[in-house]
Amino acid sequence: MQHSKSIESLRETARRVRRSILEMTTRAESGHPGGSLSATDLLVALYETELNYKAKKPNWKDRDRFVLSKGHAAPALYAILAEKEFFPKSWLKTLRKIDSKLQGHPSRLDTPGVEVSTGSLGQGLAMANGMALAGKLDKADWRVYSILGDGECEEGEVWEAAMLAAHYKLDNLVAIVDQNGLQIDGPVAKVMHVNPLAKKFKAFGWHVIKINGHDFKSILAALEEARKTKGKPTAIIAHTVKGKGVSFMENKVEFHGKCASKEQCAIAFKELVK
Amino acid sequence: MKAMREAYGEALVELGESNKRVVALDADLSSSTKTNLFAKRFPSRFFNAGIAEQDMLGTAAGLAAAGKIPFASTFAIFATGRAWEQLRNAICYAKLNVKVVATHAGLSVGKDGATHQALEDLAVTRVIPNLRVLAPCDATETSAMVYAMADYEGPVYARLPRIASPVLLDECKFEFGKWRLMRNGSDLTIVACGLMVNEALKAADGLARKAGASVRVLNASSIKPLDSRALKKAAAETGAFVTAEEHSVLGGLGSAVSEFVSSESPCVVKRVGVNDSFGESGEPAELFRKYGLNAQAITRAGLKALKQRD
View 1 (cartoon, rainbow over the protein chains, first blue to last red):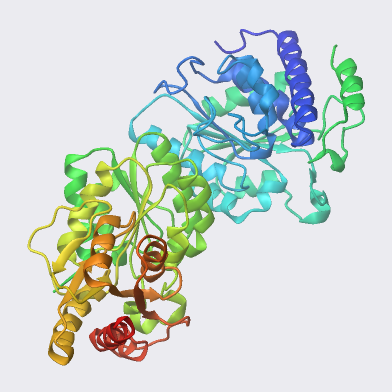
View 2 (cartoon, rainbow over the protein chains, first blue to last red):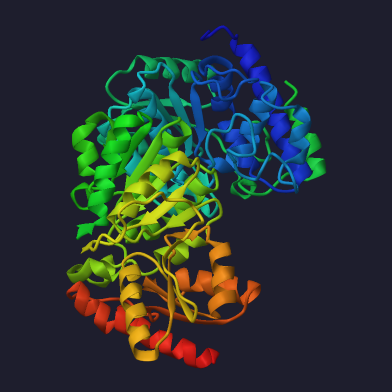
């Protein structure tokens, strides 16, 4: 099923997802638009071309597993899950509100299509490893994918998990780092010297691919290369832009955890039409 | 005499034979926690995370999410201290089917000293929603508990001491929320867990001798959920409690009993445990004496409870 979607249709889906992100976070007056927008193209590529799943049967045993380790990008995940009909789009209006099935950070018990509960940074890769180990044990064909933030890579557990994945030769696992270069307190490079991420993953025994995380051709090629890589896990270091697609949000650290006003949201919608 | 961790390791192998979903994890302490027995029998179903407890629990969460029944072991201080947030967020919030069986809980760690003696693990696990918390009294109960844990779908924490201890039970069918009546009595109830159950039985003898008291002893191996029926009944029939645990007096079994009794059937509760301090190096028996965790200390608390009630 890979590459059956044209690049233009992926771009169109990504625009819809970005509009959803804006709409739901503005309505919630809360959430993390910046890091959701930077991860959008990666998520769209995964859900449109790479992952095997049955939206109406989210626990189908042969599905590929996805873990959003940077759980604060939940609006992007919810938008693509709604797009793929894991649940009705009307749920998106309830984000972060009382009694909602869409919690501020992904919750396994609440949302169809969410495999594990994440959002406390640094924990997702270890959980993805556990799934990948189970898959290996069962000699299953399904694969495991996880998206991490670059700021998140400051967490020690990420590197514990990076060690484990390589030690157990988890070639059924792909970790994608959404390297948007910004975290709450400012530029990642200024807050904590987490780079060079590619060299670090390589030193930990991973196959590493560096790409532009907004270029669908590169994303699809990297995912294909990961599938062909045997004996080690693959890390895709995706260079991205925080707030991507909305001019006044791009590379603006304040939009990590701040939402657009209604007026700003309207402007953003115009930018995201084509 | 048998160490509960030995019983754990053996039971896990047995369970592994009949239940292929069972896998085991450790963080470089498998020869101490006895998951090495499982590792030897089922090498492909054993995962050593190295000295990385947070990663171990995260990995266990993932294995559970993919349908396995992971038993993850390390020392209690690391399982519940170092990796508390993974236990809370990755495992319990998602209600994943992970069994954390921690050994070397309490002062019985001995010579390694305070850094390795978990005296707070019951306190920090008991407060996590969805988590069941256990502390067996001997090797027999530990084996039964391993099967009960596997049969229950959801996260469980069990703590085991380091040292060998008397085998108190010939047979045992473990049930969550059900406390075994070790001895019946009508004047006072001692609620104990782990190694303190045997001390409680000795204290019951001492109290009979010294005060002519008829003492009930309950084995509170299921700390969460509590046995509310046994507690209510004991409150009504004996009107006074002593709790005993190889743990801080803050937040553990004594607190759990006090919380329940104060709202449901108020009566005197005296708590025996480590009195808000760290441990230190020494022989377990010396530590138990110094920190007031033995039959003598329970007897003293019993006498006070009887006096205060009457």
